[in-house]
Length: 140
Ligand code: CMP
Image (cartoon, rainbow, N blue to C red):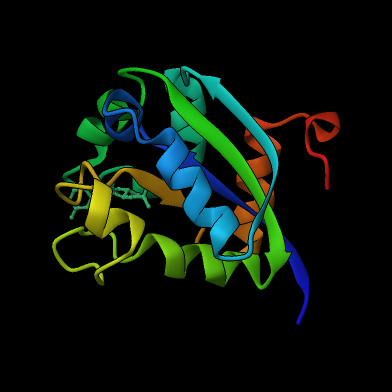
């Protein structure tokens, strides 16, 4: 299996509720390595770059507003099959449909307040990491 890099964003709802540590420890316990992390507040422009694919969908404006509403933690994760593993650890987009024990089931409350983002493919991961980190910030 290939060693991959992927992105997680701990969203403003989870940061506000003091869940950063709990969420990071789940990635580590389940075999992913944290190779970069920063607490920051995203600009509208940055959020549009990451979520532009959803432009025009009914939830898009709320997504932009929510993701710029407070600090987020940007996390680069490394490991075998990291893209798929991250998606497995975080669970379904809608926390009400997410499997028990996943991050979204435990820390999210609704599809638009689902605690974390995870890149959905290796291509998205490369693009999103490139938008949010300088190459020298990732200790791969
Ligand atoms: P995320 O994995 O960050 O990627 C896109 C986000 O859009 C998603 O998580 C949700 O927070 C949000 N989203 C996707 N589908 C819906 C939906 N049906 N209703 C509200 N928000 C959604």
